[in-house]
Image (cartoon, rainbow, N blue to C red; front, side, top):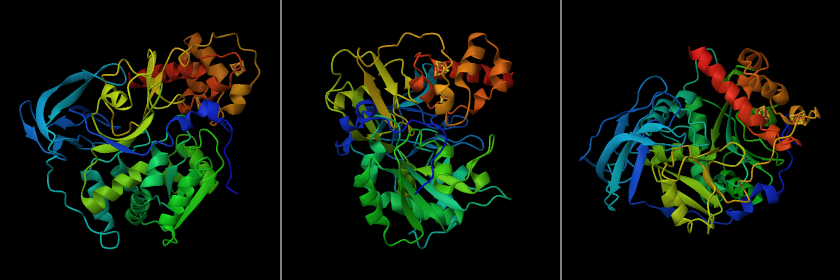
Amino acid sequence: MPRTFRGGVHPLHSSHEGKPLSSGSAIRELIPSSVVIPVGMHLGAPSTPCVQKGDRVLLGQTIATPNGFLGVPVHASVSGTVIAVEPRQQLKGHPEDCIVIENDGLDEAVPFTPAGTVESVSPADIINAVRQAGICGMGGAAFPSAVKLAVPEGKKAEIVIINGAECEPYLTCDHRVMLEQPLRIVSGLRLLLKAANVQKGVIAIESNKPDCVVSIKAASMNYPEITVLTLPTKYPQGGEKQLIEVVTGKQVPQKKLPIDVGALVFNVQTAAAVSDAVLLGKPLYSRITTVTGAVAQPSNFLVRVGTQFGDAIEAAGGYKGEPKKIISGGPMTGFACPSDEVSITKAGGGILVYDEAMSREDVELACIRCGKCVNACPIGLMPYQIKFDAEKELWDAAQKHNAMDCIACGICSYSCPAKRHLTQAIKLAKDQIAAKQKR
Ligand code: SF4
Ligand code: SF4
């Protein structure tokens, strides 16, 4: 039996989980009439546009070049004409540099050059193909994958874990990829193992997706280096540190990275993108995204990067009733968007529309010191205490209470019988501490 991790919620019942809304929806392709591609979709400095208004671009063409150690290139997700290179309001509510392309509908692509086969390609060529393809973590973190694969001197990777937990309620895009495209994931893992010189790969899937376990097991049956692990359904199992603990039994110490315990973790869609980059020479310009909640037809789409939320919602049959809130991601870790005129990014796994009933804010009551938030926190923090610090603007105290270790999983708020807005308060504390450190 796999181990478990401290805290968490077990399980989120399907009425809260929301996954049945879209889990049966097979992947459909959505090609928009235009795309708005932010040049800062990854962790690290935004890329620099290398096209200008009026240029004709081809599908897969580099349109922004990387900057710095954590830089990744950005590619055109349609063929057509660049109609603007300008700041546009994006997910976090402030303007970001974007490249706007009007789609000519031809999908005329640059030549894609495969790096080789799984057997023939060298580790260096795999890392190079991943870098050139602009791949960053597609589970939400958007960390550049080529940087993750370049294991620092003095460290050794012993296991590559493919994260198929998809523990976030409502989201089912990873579920559909595992079910419909298991070979892309398995090929991607084989390439990741080769790139990192690791002999052991694990694809970890929660028990609420038994169909994915069957499909991934069938696709990986000829590769003894790959194990498919079924994990009990528990949120936030897909958190990097939680998953490593469950799979390996090792805890990643505070302020340390997974590689410090010999682990590399990649999302299922990241692994699939690695396969496309190496075996097909295809840059990362599309992904599978769930559009769900108060929409007429909750769906999973193969979308082009830069597709506007509004276009994706329309493709899902449009709003069901009056929309009250549009969430980028799921209800636990996602955040409310300023409008539906924002872009789906490389890391954008979902769009969740809330109607009036779903968006009702509970009235916050006084803390009754029940300790439920402490017991539920997977990191072992004291959420009630950090909220108290934040309310008093005691940012040094919040730091002392390890606010920066919070992974924003939202469980403390979910567990609190007094409906206290703990996660928001801790996020505010983190922002204040980060701003102070920057100064
Ligand atoms: S949001 Fe942060 S403090 Fe709250 S349970 Fe998750 S990790 Fe702990
Ligand atoms: S769960 Fe809520 S009421 Fe209980 S200690 Fe935490 S903040 Fe207070």
